[in-house]
Amino acid sequence: MVEGKRYEIIFTRSAILRYQNEVYPYLNSNFGRNRVFEIDFEIFEKIETLEYQPHRSSREKTFVDDPKEVRFLLYRASRNFELKILFFVDELTKKVTVTDFFPTRMNPTRMKS
Image 1 (cartoon, rainbow, N blue to C red):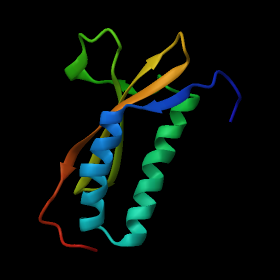
Image 2: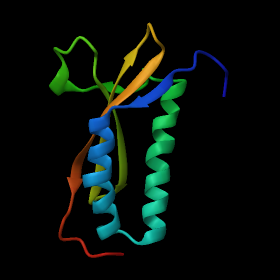
Image 3: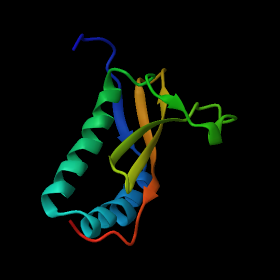
Image 4: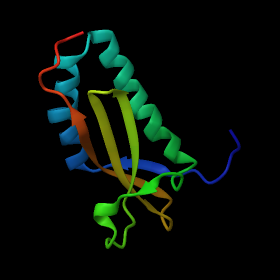
């Protein structure tokens, strides 16, 4: 990868809590242990790509009037699990702030794999 501007990635407390209290428990109850580790790794690996390319994602339409230009990455592990990773970029401080993990598709009736 070409070295360029590197952005620091930070997580809001609410984003961490949502991940710990909603997303991770869902993964544990609907996927096998090895798959949970893979998904968890893939989600954070996807977030790490923002260090060098924070503007490659789409703007979140529900926050179109927000001056922070909230953007999102979409992570899809299966047809029953899809996650929006919401964040904004601060050009002055060269920081990407992950503000939420928003489950767009979770099937609570799915049996453990």
